Image 1 (tube, rainbow, N blue to C red):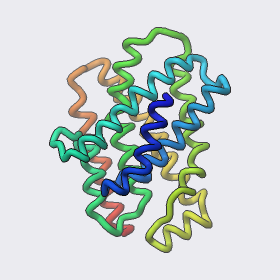
Image 2: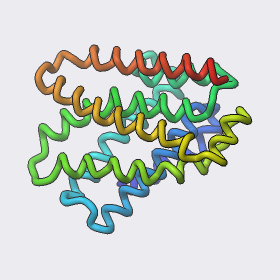
Image 3: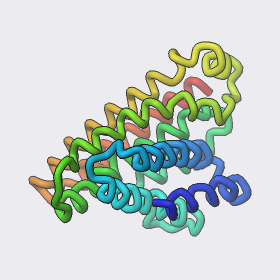
Length: 218
């Protein structure tokens, strides 16, 4: 897990220089949440911390692969992650949309695949409950996340600075809803191993709606 944090820290410094600004906010948020999970492990928050560490490493590998494939302009980049690159072409798009696009790809598309893999391999008590406990850490991280960036749109930036509850709560609850949807997709994949294209189509549909919102607010 420390390797994941180290990689996120290195990316935090490299993404702008690599002209991958569309990943910057998502990476910062990812680092904040992962550090929070690491601290929770130290405080015996989880019943099965070894599983949580394994989960974090496996889950993060999907994100790191997406960054690497984007850098190399590889056509095998999954379409949900490619939508984040579409966002990069909208110069006036709200910054928070990049966070939601990254979360959409990672949670709605990547997470079900990780759950199928790990929950099929792992045996132990409290695995599902431990994964659900991460939701509380996500919500607690919300205020810290909105403090690491500014919105280009003056109205949105006013909301972010003065009406934080109005600004970040909808985004955070959306992400929690997506985590519920990921569980549903996980159960679907358990029943039908060929259902992944359907999961991906739904994720792409969500990304397209976010890109439309970006145009409206931009």
